[in-house]
Length: 292
Image (tube, rainbow, N blue to C red; front, side, top):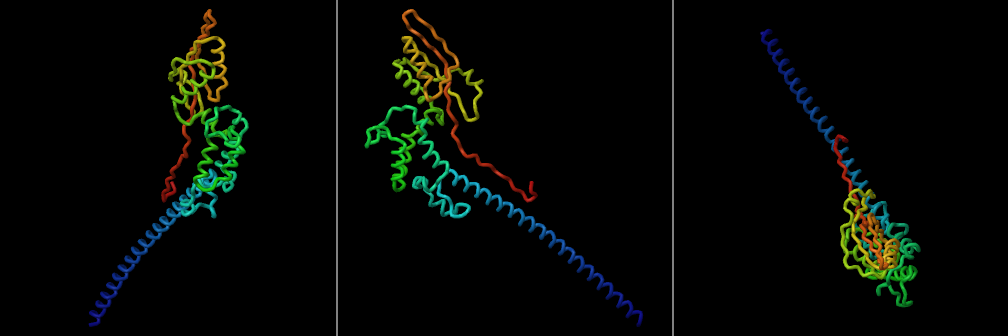
C-alpha cells in the first residue's frame, strides 16, 4: 500500500514538472514574441519619426522658396498653412507687402536700372505715357503700380513694367529660349538701321565653331550667316551697329573683299547666344528604417 502511494506521488510530481516546463516554454515564447514586437514597434516609430522630420524639412524649404521669391506674403507662422497657400494670389500682392524678395528687387531696383534704361528702343504705343507723350519713366511706372487696385490692375501694371522698363533689355540681350526667327529679325533690324536692305538671311553659322565653343552651363549657341555687299561706308556702319547691338553677335569667321567702285563685300559666320529656361530642381531623399 505504501509503495503504491509513493508511486502515485512520483507520478503527480512528474506531471507537475511537465506542466511547469510547458508553462515555462509558453512563457519564454510569449516573452520572445513580446520582445520581437517591441523591437519592431520601436523601429517603426523611429522610422515614422524620420519620415515626419524629412517631410517637415521639405515643407520648410518649400516655404522658404515661396517666401524668398515673393510669390506670397510671409506666413503668419514658420511655414505656410494650406489655407494661406490657397488664398495666395501673386497678381494681387503689392510690392510693399513682400520687401527684399526676388520679385520686389526685380520690379523695384532692376526695372529702374539706369544702365539698362540707357539702351535705346523704339517706343511702342503701349509704352507712351499719355501725360507726357514720351516713353514711361521708371517713376511713372512705379506710380502706376502703386495706384493699382485689385488683381486685374496689378497684373496690368506688372506687365507694363516688364514691357516698358529696363527689364525689357534682359530678354533682348539674352533670350530664354531658342528662337531663330527673332534672331534673324534682330539682325535684319541692324541692317535696315545701317541703310542696307539684305537680300536674304539664314540661320546656320559655323557648326564646327559651335561644337568646340566653351560656354557656361545653360548657355547655348545659335549660328547665323550674314552677307553685305554695299558702299564701304554702309558696310562699316553695319559692322558698327552689330558691335553696338545689345545682343551679342560673335563673328567667328569673316571674308572682306574690296572692289574698285568703292564696294566693300562682307561674308561672315556669327554665333549668337540664348539661355536655357531656369527651373527649380527637386531632389529625392530615400529614408529606410536601417538609416542607410
